[in-house]
Length: 81
Image 1: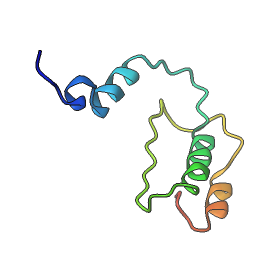
Image 2 (image 1 turned 180 degrees about the horizontal axis):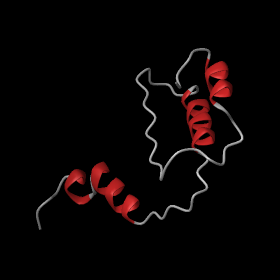
Image 3 (image 1 turned 45 degrees about the vertical axis):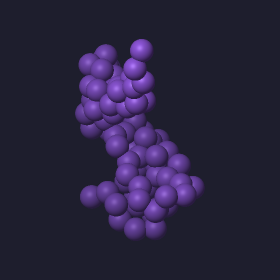
């Protein structure tokens, strides 16, 4: 039996994303701005200075409690158009 690296045994991030997205079904109740707000609030406590927020959505926002002005104002600068 030969040793294998952990990367050879575990799936890659693109593979995981592709499999996960293939199982999604849009239902028309997208809280997109809520997801952005929550993601940004979690990122504020991140230790790494390089940060990215990846959002996979079935469409535009139509079910959020937050609005663009809430996110832009809370974050301290305009991040949404």
